Length: 205
Image 1 (cartoon, rainbow, N blue to C red):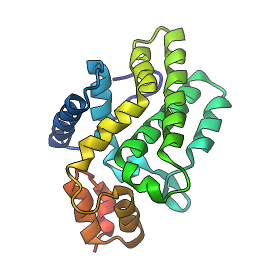
Image 2 (image 1 turned 120 degrees about the vertical axis):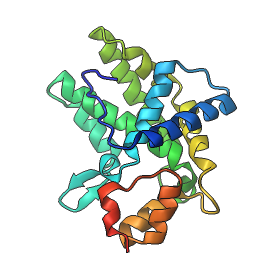
Image 3 (image 1 turned 90 degrees about the vertical axis):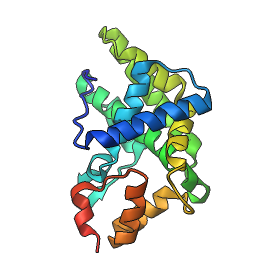
């Protein structure tokens, strides 16, 4: 899938993508959500892409970090070109959807609730949809559906992952512990649910 927003370059093996394709299909059926095939494919590509920590987090002077979505959203609104705005809006929508879906279980102990991510991500996708429609891009329909059905699709992602997380369903906590300690045990927990740590897994010991 390509557009002015850029396209994902998937480095994960095809079996990971096939795994998520089946999981997403099952979750959509279980949640009884009606979505276009292109939207379903977008969810699969999103999950596959973000199983790499160096894709989900951004490279900063402090290492791999997740910048506040409000900051990225502000950059989108002040962008000088339509392409820059589209890239920033897509980043906001994608990260918000991934966090609201995959890390939903962690929000009970966070100052910012899942509703914040749903509102932020939904708005970003809907603005992106309008931009694509104005430039006659076919992807506008996908971003429109992602925006209007954001909360439902986040639940689809939650169901996609929840069967793979064993006793500890707080995946974000496991993620943070692995990043802080480099623990091989935490790395294995993440890998069991399909998170490919890629080159970053060399930290584990």
